[in-house]
Amino acid sequence: MLKLYVSPGSCSLAAHIALEEAGADYVAEKVELAKGAQHQPDFLAINPKARVPALATDRGILTENPAILAYIAQTHPGSGLAPLDDAFAFGRIQSFNAYLASTVHVAHAHRPRGSRWADDPAALEAMKLKVPKNMADCFELIETTMFAGPWVMGDQYTIADPYLFTIASWLESDGVDPARFPKVLDHRNRMAERPAVKAVLAWLKG
Image 1 (tube, rainbow, N blue to C red):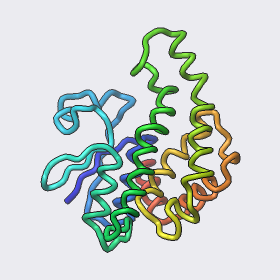
Image 2 (image 1 turned 180 degrees about the vertical axis):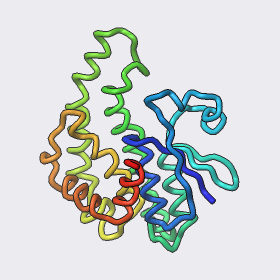
Image 3 (image 1 turned 180 degrees about the horizontal axis):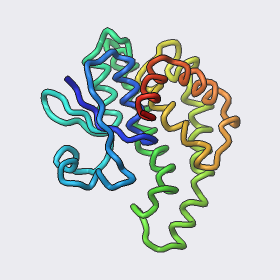
Image 4 (image 1 turned 60 degrees about the vertical axis):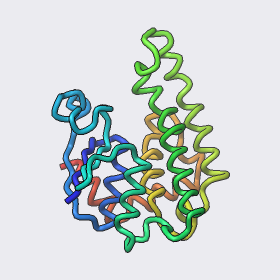
């Protein structure tokens, strides 16, 4: 059985939804980031990066959303969460998910996690002030050049969809009006109605 380490409000939501969509045999365990649980020896033994998500498999631990999402799709081929027989199409999904991880998530993190890059209070404040523009620029690019519709990659729902849903849910807290991006907002609203998404969000609130 798979075990996913998650935290409410974090990017681990993407992998959590994907496992539910895949019908995977898994359990989830909450890691209380606000209480510093990620820095405790028991969790550092699981993921020395002190981050979620982390996925325990029968072959070891996987970390980083793009890797975990790809693993879920590849180990549950019947779920249709990725075009596994088309290397280029799968590469497009990986490209999108890598952009979310390496650029969009980092743009967001400059608001709540600025201490990763600076200690000076003025620098931290300057980073926070830039977050709304940086996030808006990222989502403008997604809206106009990356989002195929009705799902991220087109007609097929894939592992890119729960990842976009997760990061798009941070827009308001980052000072960005999601109405500026009607395709992304419509996608977020439709995602919220999926049974798997409702089930995961209900579990996280429990």
